[in-house]
Image (cartoon, rainbow, N blue to C red):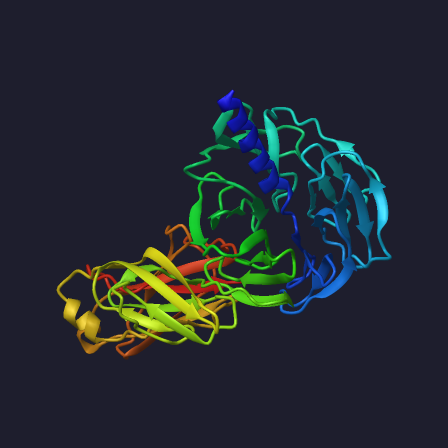
Length: 480
């Protein structure tokens, strides 16, 4: 009896995580989003064209379960209880909603073209919800809780669970719009909780979002492998998320409610580096603002000397910051977004304490920074000389110039620039004719070693002088 009760609770939690938070969707244009947020009298559907920096309430409406947009300008779908699908061709304006159907799932997600909409895994429409075809879903088992499609035509996913198996989730994949499905991956929910999916901009690119505690992971191989990206401080409701229209773009809808909605706040956290760092836009405010510390860095591991630029996306009416870069109890900086250079190897825990007029909040990220050693006979010279490795433009399209300086004692060495993808795989070596000048440069045209154009996204590069010395790694972003 106890196991059955635990299973029912588990199913309820999964259903809530999967269905209750479809409250933000990307529009067809870069920077365009729709989201459900608080109003002075309840809830409303908001529209933004500047990444969430400003937003207009289009419709003050309650009991909306989910919203989604396809590639149609001004087109928006909503599910309103009880499971009724409506469509607007005027950006969700309150007078523009047209009833479509009450059949099928209350989970909706926009397709890859104008007028394409899915209801769960079983129904698909290509005419703005006028007519739906039923998918056979051969190979589907258990209870589908988290569906999503891929940017690749006819490719899609769903997470399923099975009654009586409380610790396991399956990722199923389809290549024919849910006519057939097969197992792509299996997860232990307690080791790798997978709670919501959103596609990125590339084929096979997925984000996984867990809202309690809030964490983001990223996959570039159709969910076969995942990279942990970031996590967030408690104290806010990280309500829902969605991938954007640009490479590496992620939006998180964040809310805070207290005292029977006499205090209501909503924020858009916007990232262009796969969720590693964020800008924060305060879209609605009623009552006292919460105080919650949040920070990260785009790069958290490198060799000595490692200079880290910290990104701060705390919320509140903050008047002072206290950074402790090695958690030794000594305040190292009071700047909002400081830069700090680590001079010794090891793992470093970092703490940020913020203050407003009424109190404080802190966020400790344990073992957040990892500094690795430098080997080789030139260790002292490496630390003493700044190679000024950089690239411009960054972000870039279609090419970028990588520049660096070479000291006199390295003028006769072979020089290469090694370029790596986000998974750490070497994709290109750029050999450089040593010019015997201290300033050198080389152009990377966005192609791998086979001459194939790589996809947009984050890439890393470093100097390779043919010796056993390790050099700092730099980041660049290719956009298309």
